[in-house]
Length: 530
Image (cartoon, rainbow, N blue to C red):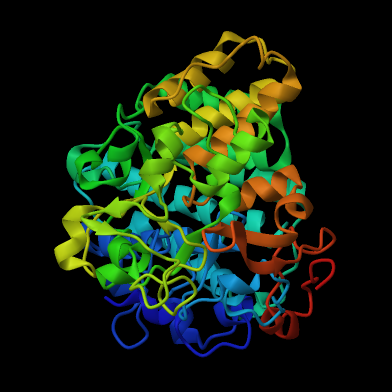
């Protein structure tokens, strides 16, 4: 069965495509093969159909060539974490104010996610017809589809703002669909998560750990409530995740992003094989790779020293030393070395030299670094002999993120003295090799908020949450405006300036509704400023 065909027909607008196709398309999973009456009969039919609902979960690097924009590590180029320069995507347009209502990534994401929502709706509407010997398993399949439908709605909401709720497969009379209110969207996603969670296990057997779980549903609720600033509800949702006891922090941060950490207890939701091309897309040009995403100096300078001090608070002389030599005296947060390769570093036997003319890794050359830095996260030496064909999973939600959500929500609800705040911050920091929180310094809501935001940036770098954090904290004007800096050029003693970034707070906290949707759906309203 090839269910992809139902979302790959020529379109003039996404919801119009989903609603106005010919009748046989509306009543069949594959218009050239079988009808609904013949299809939804066996467990094999269900698992094949459910697989098409899972297809839309994001990868970390290029994985699905039918949906190139669904790549969260590359998407970090639209944030202050990195500079993206791949020729197969358009994330470089976002930070320089070049996005239009015809932006391909915004269009693809909108169209594809609604396509996967339709797949989920059709599954929910038909799965009961099939014979499955194990009734509980059959019920679980339905809960999985419901949870995934909620996940796609959540992503659309955080990217585009309040969007149309699609809770059934649309027919030809429903082609003009208007936005739901924020309250309606939040209520829908949260209630869908609760409904799905009731039919899902907390833990799967080893062959099914990729499936969406009860904890993933509660994690989605946590992310939802954090995004809208409902911190009381976020605390409650995060406590449900913690209370399940299904997840734990992996003892070694670096291993999380290598084959050695596969199947770790920190995975809440992941894409199997979602880092298949991680080595090729991120490793240096001297390795025969593309290095399409280059970390910024801003991110590098966020990592503390081993004493738990920011380099900014050390004073101008020390700051200048660490700014030019980030690993000075090997005295930085180990997560820096685990996540980012720096100029002059010897990595896998190769010395990285971005500032020498005609060096294999010369800065600014096509398929080389544009900042002088490289991403190490998910780049495992085991893939060097097969740079284009790795098989690591990509973690979409991991336990450390939910713990950081929980801590932040406690702080924002005035519970900053709750023992869980320091407990979980210390667990995350100590796991990485960092000292416990200095409670003589971080003992007010303001200082703890500063610490949590810094922890999120270094702990979760390149993994996806930063885009949403910038939006929910409303800090785009601070972190996405002005010059973007790379490493210090030894010839000048100054940071290179990669580009000038522009952020319009009245517009850029939401992506535009694609022009094709605006022209084909007369009920749709465009986001402000677009």
